[in-house]
Length: 74
Image (cartoon, rainbow, N blue to C red):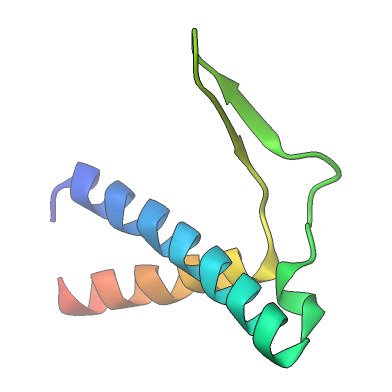
């Protein structure tokens, strides 16, 4: 698999995990999955756009599951 595809899959898995963690938090009330692990979000600024990424346990779970699926499926 090309490295750019692997990186794209891992980033999407990170985002999907974070979204699923927030949804589980809202529906079930299990707030551990959306607890921020960093004291402040990682920030990336462009000229007009600013992107902030906060790492949560749910996003790490999404990252691990996606990495496993990508490596297993090839």
